[in-house]
Length: 351
Image (cartoon, rainbow, N blue to C red; front, top):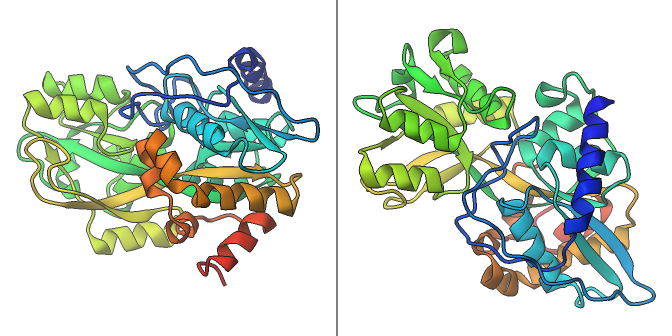
């Protein structure tokens, strides 16, 4: 109950920061490295003060959209979505809230304090099954998937002669903050290669601290689950030679067999200085979830509106370029809301 109270209290504080329009540097950090118990969040960039929300029509259906902290991508991207869709979805009105990101957002949906939220699809999976991050809390089944939005890439950065995941054995490796989504990703990826945390010297550091530690020779490698390019890695690569470790097809397939939320992802060569070749790895996804209390028509209009307005959303935030119906259903391991399912069947990407 304490965790639920924390999530609700955070939303109450954030209500003052409710928005329907928001812009931000597109280098904002992803939602995967939380300061507390969520799977996410952190950035040096600061979102601009949002424009005031327009007054809703008398018959408006107001939906509270839980995102993340004000310096993170979820908040900025959610603000762009609301800014574009409000006025184009009939009586629907999205009101974006700053929150504690993925795990907190699921509690907010479950407690009726939010109607729509952005979360990582792996955290969504843990919540629905009551595993990993939700092992102590138990399963939460009051939400459904709406659509996967964009990739949050599992990036493994190393220095020196460490050129493969197998080479991490016996090395000093940062696996993200303790209890974070990144730490679970690191454990799962290493396990696929037959490596446990007992086989490495575990360091629990956030993205920026991990990059600094690698630069200073205090660690040999670190895991980072984030949209690529990631600011911390970009800055590290400007001053230090780095390796970006790939995950081969065999081990990616093993991961996907055990964890349906993973998808393969190719980081293009040139994304980071000194890494000239494409690197194939795996990714999780920032995903729109919705309360099961919402009607089929409301969710259908919301999901359809996302894809019908892709160009405008992309103009407001670079992550909009990844909006694609086929991509939006891949790696989703929980049920789709009937409204989302209706749209994706019409789009020909679900049977």
